[in-house]
Length: 424
Image: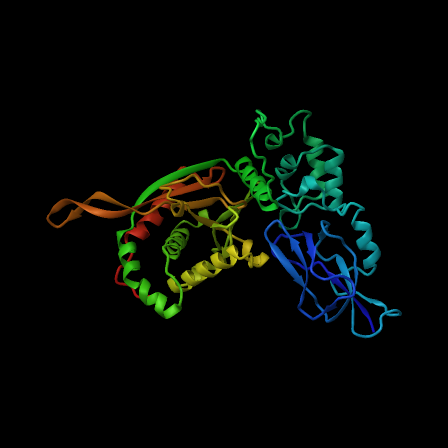
């Protein structure tokens, strides 16, 4: 019968390539349809690639460690029939001359001409032509990332790059300060040197890029969440019994953020050069600490369409699968605003770094009992209240103090006015 190519599948919004971490099968192994064949890594997540057909793995086209563009063939699968005289069948998304083209893309050391180490921290896709021009002109990645793109999804075209090069003055390139620290680290006898893992390198690059791209400003508000605490204590056992899941404070905070975004939609935006993209959907990212100590941010898509029960289940599901490394690539992309809980580490407040290309992120501190002045029908009184600091970091290019401060104040207002009689 025919030979079928296994291609590198599309794995989420804006993901244009993936690195092969390991092959789970070897040539000659039998494969069932939808059975995992290899493990790959993108700049979002590690995941397994299933087989599109049942049969035998005849040939591996790309070795471990190679960086492969989406849509390129990575293996040949033979059906159960004899394959010596079989012809190669290309899938609809694979090129016609797939085997020769694949081997020409992948170099002897396992890296494609499409992907070099200097582009691993890129936040958008660059064509091989653009990469070659950038390499020849000695344009640093940080400088390249700052050039507005006119292509699809903000991609940088050859025309964009050539126009930029014509207008660039000698000596005005942006320095990659993170690659050359001002003071080198010192190593003394007895010091232990730990190599960053792949995810930690990625996080480091993303955080430095975000601080370089966005001028960060942080506004702080202390909110009285006594009603929220009392309500959760009242309904959490019922929720556990009915849903088989725990009820944390996170879905309540997310709900308040969603309500505030509806009041201030210019928080739910992205920046594209000199254009502002006002996002229709409200997709809330939630930072999750992994057992390894690294951080990952799964996204609740269309979070405004959930009720509090739906948010609670989504939060628990994403957090659990994040810690088990079972998230899908699409669940780590498309966020429009992010929440992070620094209170889980006993911190009362923080200055979180924005997840690009978003323009805001809210850190929730530890909830603490404090004496506070409360107004009563008989005058002011001192009472024990549950208080929490909300820290809102925002991109000062497009979010001024008035908007950034008003937004976090509105989140606090919704928390303080929480209806303690609501059902769940």
